[in-house]
Length: 360
Image (cartoon, rainbow, N blue to C red; front, top):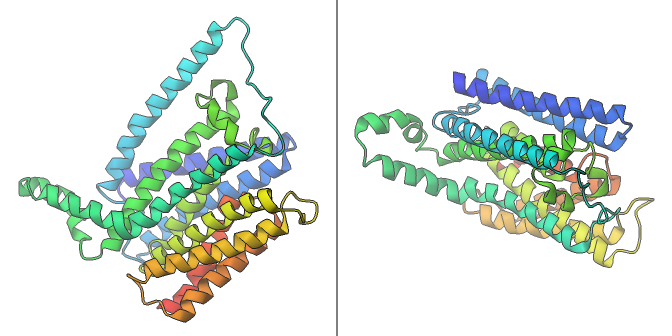
């Protein structure tokens, strides 16, 4: 690892440690659900970074944690984003001080269940994750070609500086792995920075309108669902992405099924659900609907991926079926850990292990 990679990894470790600190605070305040969710998120983030660096150091694969120019792009984002965000925090602080009697947040909308429209807004944000699939198998190839095309207009001394763009041209999936790691990495840094302020300094949090899509239990010491989604996606990309070509296949299939299964289970359960699962707010109608939609989305994803992998009818049915069953079990268990993390992490791990035997 070069110096920039060490800096990026160190910053991510720091964010993982801050998450652990917030988990400890949640335990001290007797917020059990927040403690469990935060501690699992922190451990998954720290472990995935450590394993990825270990894989690179032992030369188990040809893929490192991050390489030039992607490390430069991540550093540039951090250098631009952090001062801008802290400027927003300082502005929020000045506004708060200027008000003689600070106005408390309007909490009249906080209920056990979000209004249906906010639930839809919340679920639609999950679709952003589908961009990872397209960057792995479509947009990433285009980005690399654009890089190479533009650099061809520059003298060789300039194009040679971007050696990594050319060195990994033979295997475009390696390029897309680095691209996806950098894109999801900078997104996670931005999301974590904002959420830390939401939890630790709520009065100075400059994105208070975002609180409207948070459920009541998520508005105190618990990391937001977008954080669990970010850590869930980032961790499986670090853990399984280096293992080409099975890794990207498993990641994209698991994320797609998790997103659509979770969305369907929630929206169907709220609209048509009557039979409660134990004493939870989840319903059997939502569970079955989520499993069915997850299976269908898995089949559609495999049809799309058949352009890149040899997928027969057995694989086309088996993997989505196993994925739907896993999602159903996790939904039934109703763990304290956010579904956005557990679905992505557990499902991708199982699909990755099975795919090693089916596609190798």
